[in-house]
Length: 464
Image (cartoon, rainbow, N blue to C red; front, side, top):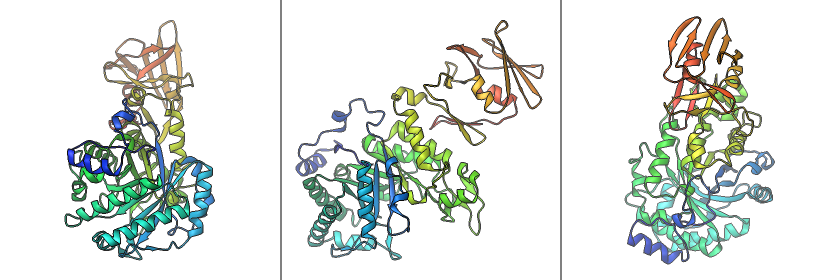
């Protein structure tokens, strides 16, 4: 979530001049990373609500995270800070995380405190130079006391009347954090299109955005039901990229809770393991719309191609077993860590009956690809064995026979047709031999066996 090197967005003479005065010596994103994709240091951020959940720190897999954001540090209207309810928990978290070389940040604010929205508190403290200065000094001391690596601002949300004071607060915080060698980020709303988003997004000036090391796009809570759909993640990323945020400093927020039930992901999968692979459950008294493993994997692929990381809100709500979201993310990163941007763009995910069919680059078993006809070809044997189909290959005739549940399919290499139970059907792409493996058109074969196929362009994911 936090970039190790601060960035600048050169969007106007005024914005450049203001933040240049506060941040001498910073350089542009293009100078840092002339070949921008993939992200240089992909970030896995876990929000940790220390005062909300009574969870032991030892349960948190800091070894699988790059950053932990402890929530929340609550300000008062005069710029003072309300003491943490569990300060020892933050100290234990910092000790554990730093041992794992994981950074720890404090989140200032949040939506509410003791049931009262914090927006009025922020408006009051940011309106006066005295309270802004007092807040900055208190935050600086807090970060020093707990040996933190930085902070993020979570003011939800400034308005057209208060955006000027928000900007003043951001600038003095930026200056103070620079003096301490600490980093600074903020949470921002998602967007419903690459060009349009909520009013608060439009209010964020270039001056403001230049002062953050990163932003987290909260691509959730879009609506009361399907509150974090895949398209919302994609448009949120595109929106903030279009606003000039360097991709390495853009973090895609992913929820681990359902709406409108507010059930946690871990509780849903504890009730039924199959819920880990779904995005909707008819729970009572309210239904649950959430993100299961497959949707979060798709969001990861979007972030790997276009952004600099993902943020899980809240990491406490993850499961501890093999349905863990964090464990899935770590495994996916391990598989894709050494891929170039071109390889990431070509990477295809296949989900069969809810489960990912994993093609490892070093396995020698092949991997799906899109051919010149814009059709997905799959390595035959591994894919068919995943659905318990019997495969035989006649090297003399260069034909493949597939048998499953009473169906027989015959495919001839280099011929654009397929025989299904003796009936010939045309295909718009032929089977081929590549690196000594037979590849067949995915859609033609699976549909011949009675499966339905869905293609998600944004993540290059195929659901069978």
